[in-house]
Image (cartoon, rainbow, N blue to C red; front, side, top):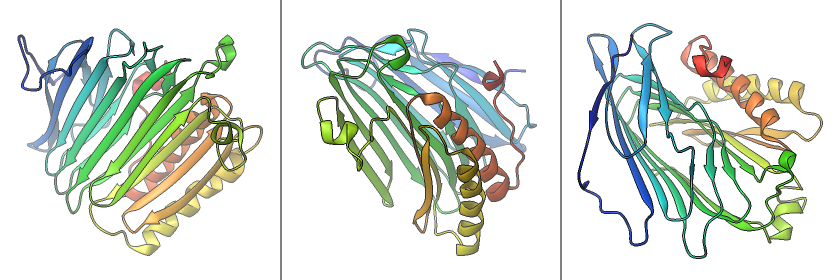
Length: 298
């Protein structure tokens, strides 16, 4: 049963597109707890929308399928997403396919922006499939999260550089990343294909072309025993999974933040590890069994 309430918007939006923009798509998703049920409502402008809201775990947690029918961005395109999770609501968002950043013309940047605000007691699981940086792309991928006290977040970011199995290495272009937990944590990175030290150095990507991050964040400091139990659980998985090209590690980077990093030649080993660790953290930190989105079984 689908309970999300879509509202199509025609005409100009409140945010004017930047000069030279080819295509701008916007989505505003609001999750609220109503009578013990997390309800999703959204507004969209352009080809970016919630295809389905599902309740495989009962009414308290809603799973949302985010789709961008064109499937990718070229220089000048912008995807702008805003997510608001109300007090006590719990939402999971995933995608049916990767986000593809295609080749850009000189000076034209493709941009994906996410702003998510979590109210007190809210939970958000942000679990899209990977972003693929095609050769000669010029792209920016931004995610900003604001957490009120008592709010908690499980999110990941997976980036695949080039298409090595298709003979299309990431040998030209650049990919900028921005991950922010407002007032708590900020990461910025610029991956340039011609940066030999970063791309192939032992202190950089060491020749690997998939980098992945899993984040658990709180709106206030975590108790140290809770942190330690969560880290021990995923470190056991990492030890069992490492081999071949996969390298990974987990740490308590801040009293409010747990981070797991992974590097691999292809996206599949990193994605598999992150799914396993997401399931473990869900159980350890929230007492919830792993309930993978139905898309993951397809």
